[in-house]
Image (cartoon, rainbow, N blue to C red):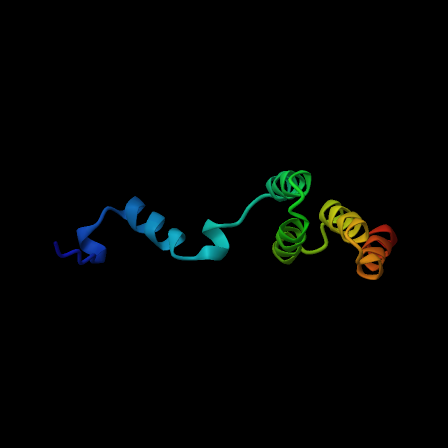
Length: 95
């Protein structure tokens, strides 16, 4: 089966959907609350490394968010990376 899409052969709304789904920054962006909930679930399951990585991704997508910085800072301190965690917490408190 051949699938060739042209601008004239596809409905405009479908075209917009396809364009948005091809840009991961837009299509895969999560809200701060979603990141926080997922990270909390990972930490409750003792999957701390994954929770830290997820929160670091969240911080890149939502820079300057104090709630994410706080959650990541606390998690870093609890998992033995006190220096980095303390730095994040101090930066968050200074804002």
